[in-house]
Length: 331
Image 1 (cartoon, rainbow, N blue to C red):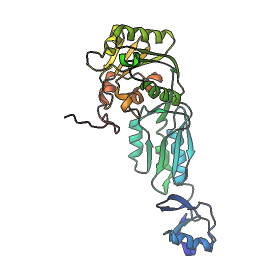
Image 2 (image 1 turned 90 degrees about the horizontal axis):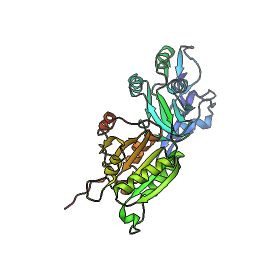
Image 3 (image 1 turned 90 degrees about the vertical axis):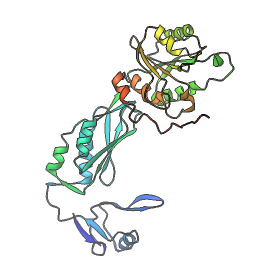
Image 4 (image 1 turned 30 degrees about the vertical axis):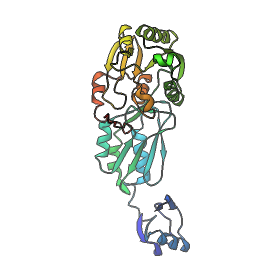
């Protein structure tokens, strides 16, 4: 391609999209491949475009342009259960073919981004995603690169993957004597149901029990007997006298991976294993912070059979103060 003044571009083929950006957003003014007319010249100038790239005088097969680079690199970094959709102006999107958990090779991502020419931008590691979600974007910075430079980047393969959910059946145990006695409505089940509906899980067991460790333990066992592959227990997670959920889970003989996680809100969360069935016990804060809480951080992982270690959970303190958290000051 070569750069020419718009006045000299009439009759030539546009080699690169020209865009308009304003308060109402961004749009393609004239697409690559368009033959420029005299009327286009004024339109371009009105949008602040006085020079354009036109086809011609290419430097041979050694050169790759941004739209070619983006698609090639995207196809290289796309791993399991990922497909690529080219976009305009040196971008390509990475989308998932399944419901599951996003897994990104962070070291490979850093290596690619350090090239300074091509950037991989993804959603957070271990986030739950559904089919056709955009999980990453490739952006190319320069207009063109030497083919050899691009081939070096293509060695960074399979950086973005989605692990499908291995578990699909969920058991839910709602604790709280006030709920059990009908003094208060259960506000937690709709929060969990919304996640289940989004990710395609079925709730095979649901029970409301009082703050009694024997009844809580019995309900968790029954959930497993009803073929729940993961059990969520809500409420009763603090150290108040009536909070009995952690005691109940310990009495079951479950292996406790963590009690108390370094995130805010819903710090008082327990992750345990009863045999091969994960138990996620979440504090009542998940009602107030229903948009994003420990359910969103841990439940997709558990349903994908990606059980976090104590070390992984400890590292979550970095960034664990979530944007949704509201600091309350008590007098």
